[in-house]
Amino acid sequence: MPLSMLEEGNTATIVRVGGKEETRQFLEKLGFVVGADVEVVSKISGNVIVNIKGSRVAIGKDMANKIMV
Image 1 (cartoon, helix red, strand yellow):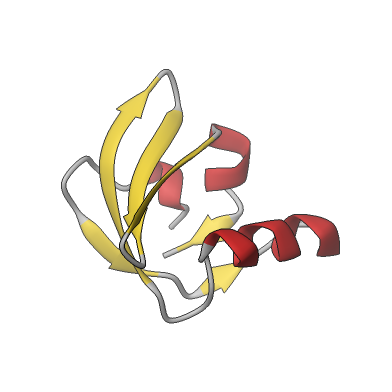
Image 2: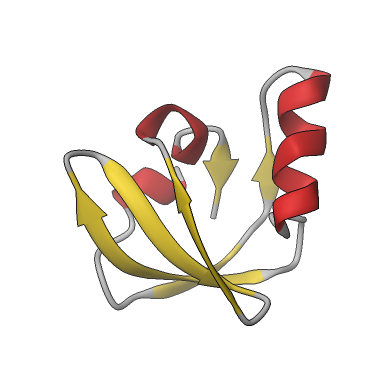
């Protein structure tokens, strides 16, 4: 399922990162790589704030839909 559907407080492992090549590279630089654990901190208006690799990152709903967990 896409990261955008994960509820607040839940943790999941990334299984696939979709989208165009430049989108995937951007997400990889933020730490969204296959096998990484990601925890949803909060969701506001579809935007998602997550903990990944010890950092807190905010991404939009369109980006969160490209990350499968």
